[in-house]
Image (cartoon, rainbow, N blue to C red; front, side, top):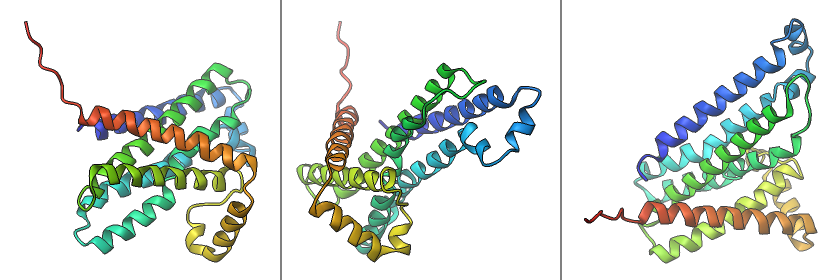
Amino acid sequence: MKNIPIIILVQILAATALLAWRYLLAYGEPNGYAAFTSFPAAGSQALLFLGWNLFLALVPYALSLLLPMAQHRLLGAAVLFIWLLFLPNAPYLITDLIHLRPRPPVPIWADILVFFFFAWTGLLLGLASLLNVQRYLLRWHTIKQTHFWIIGFAVLSSFGLYLGRVDRWNSWEAFLEPMHLLRHSLSLLSDPPIVLLAFLGFFTLLQGLGYAFFYHLSTSNPKTSTR
């Protein structure tokens, strides 16, 4: 699947165009500009947060593209660590579906289209990122070992997704407040709430199955047609 970067580029451009189209639906009315300048409600009404979240979802994918350039194993480990911190931002776009609600004058079907397209784009970025990391890990591990690494990353990503969506932590706070985040994480894991277990189960399964599907596509040889 050498055309994955092209597919992702098309997805991002399409998502950006959809958000711009929705902006015209929301603020194309005579009083649209006045409504847009009435912050802070404007950002939510225009769904501008989806654009920011899409940018954050791009970060782990971009980092996964940089991994092959890391010639030294220690440098690769550092990039991999930062990649893992930002990986939850990709599936995070799926959880933005909780913001789906009527926002007149935009028809609800338009918002459904925008939210689901952004969710799919975030999932695609995450899965492509996992594939890139798996290929990088093949330098030092067997194929079977890399699959176990990916499963572990999917579990950690799901935990980070819970921290971001439910507890409202940001990826960069791992650098700004590392000890606070560590204590909070250990407290959660010592007595995990049912919502955390649901997050871990659902999003680990989603990322795991998605990775398995795309891995199969990337490694399967096209059959030659015979007459």
